[in-house]
Length: 167
Image 1: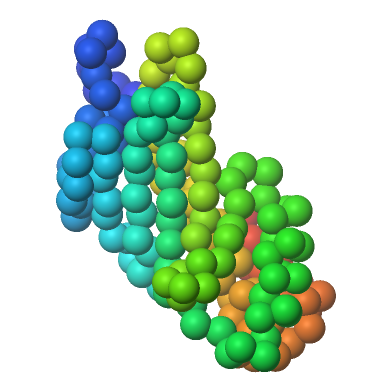
Image 2: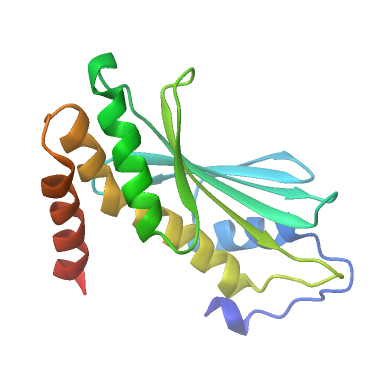
């Protein structure tokens, strides 16, 4: 059954309940951390990704974080930050940030649902898919500029070529 064909009573449905239903439907392993937070692991081509979705009532935003371990050499941090800026210029939905203390690269996206709006299951599924696709697309570029010590232009060409190769 397609996600959009599933019947929902949106009257009192919490956004994280929808995420849990999607995870169950897709047979993803997940952990409902709290009423307003859920996490799951997804295997990609390059990495396994930790995905957390959390509902923030204060600003009525469904927040998504897709993270993966990354521990670049200290002398390549300026190159990583340059790559982050360039990659974020190419991302229209969401952005990457590096959390040095945790040694994690994170892709973040927030879906604002003000005035009692509700996200559809297809929207949430697309959020999750887009996060993993972005991480998969740019992971090689981040690795090339840090561990491969390649220049940014070369690394970005690989990321762009990878995207064109799957289209």
